[in-house]
Structure formats: C-alpha cells, structure tokens
Image 1: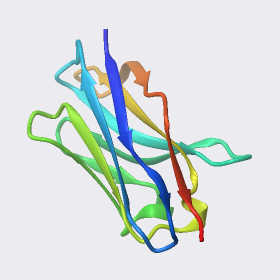
Image 2 (image 1 turned 45 degrees about the vertical axis):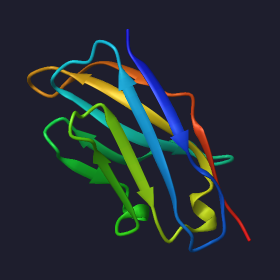
Image 3 (image 1 turned 90 degrees about the vertical axis):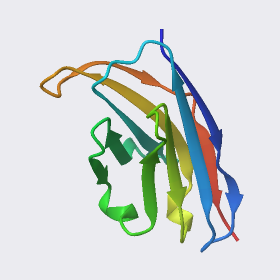
Length: 121
C-alpha cells in the first residue's frame, strides 16, 4: 500500500515563502505523477501543480512564476516551493499520487492528509 507523508506549510505574511514536501512510500508504479491540490474556504479543490515520473510539469495559471514543483533524484518525494505568496493562496494543500498505465491513464490514486497554508498580515 502507498503512504504519503506531508510536511511544511504554515503561516506567512504576503510576499513570503513556504515549502511543502510529500514523501511517498510503498508500492509505486514506475509510471506515476505527484501533485499538489488545494481547497480554499468555500471553494472546490483545484490543481496547483503536478509532476510526472518523466519530469513533465503543469501549473495552475494562478501560481505560474511563483510556485515550483520538483522531485528528488529517487522520485519518491515531491516538493512545492511557494514564493511571493498572496492571501488568496490560503488553503489546505493536499498531496496526490497517481498511479499511471503505460498510456498515461490513471489506474489508482492516493491522497495525503493535507497541510494548512495561511497567508495573512
């Protein structure tokens, strides 16, 4: 079974930076994707950033140029570096692992428990 252990986040003033980490362990397919999603108060959960095992990345338009997603050399840990944070970035951030087929279709997925990110003065 897959385990996702998240860390980081917290409280920061506008313009500040925070980092999120998510360590994946267990039975993980060679083709996979790790991503961060967020749910702000009163809103749906949206994609923030995603990175595949092949290194392809995608970002929500609202975070492009400010956030950077990356994986370690082993590909087991995903990071989200968040710079120039805005109050509208305040949300609970969730790590998601997608187990992919050879064609890139999602065969299964796992969610982390979520980390609070609060941007406030």
